[in-house]
Image (tube, rainbow, N blue to C red; front, top):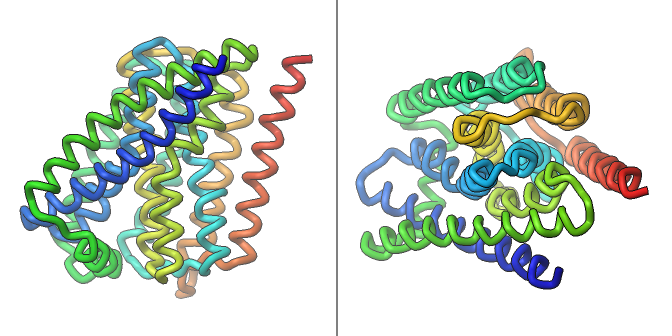
Length: 326
């Protein structure tokens, strides 16, 4: 029991630290090779902050722990919007300036609807996973096109300022890129083992563990970067981190896990977790897009409401666990 708890905590700490090193190393390497700032923000940083979810879910799927693989992805999405954006908006109301992000808001909503449709039969087949990965590939192509085409987007300016502050020599950047990735894999393996052991000891489903402890843990890189961005007034980075991460989670993380090991989906996932995730995604689109010429923004009241939703959802999960144990 004690060893499993230590593995869980150590895995989470090492995961967060290595993810941060990996993001900084990859972003600096991309900058050295002349990649446009918008592409660094949308692709490199988006991939880097979602790398913990990808590695954890892939390893969990290989081990046959479908609940952790799926719970990690959807739990992270819920955590990103309700907890991270909620906290960020309370610190500093988030204004949506970037035209690229305004396009990503409806795309994320449509992608979430697609996921619900594919999993409505309570089965993530290899075909479903391939569809998700193909959509992800198409979105990456569109993202690269946008990054090369739009040089003056506000997100690009904020990313350029951020990467300039963390500039490092190319050798050090490549070193942290490689070491960060290797430590990500190692820490994810430790984390998954500890989480499965704890779930078995307490008789809790690995889905619940994935939706709570692991989801929050793998979302810590987004929490740190979004809160720092909100404090600096870098609104588009704060929101862009969340949109990019949720797109990666919904398409790439679930797609990779399903292509490795197709699995059945628990009914509660569809009726509880995907309903909450879908409602949060739709609400983010409605308050963040900005209709009829109004600029999209997430004010402190809306941030508090998002945070309350996360508290309520977590309490719901805990009550489910208590019912199961009794």
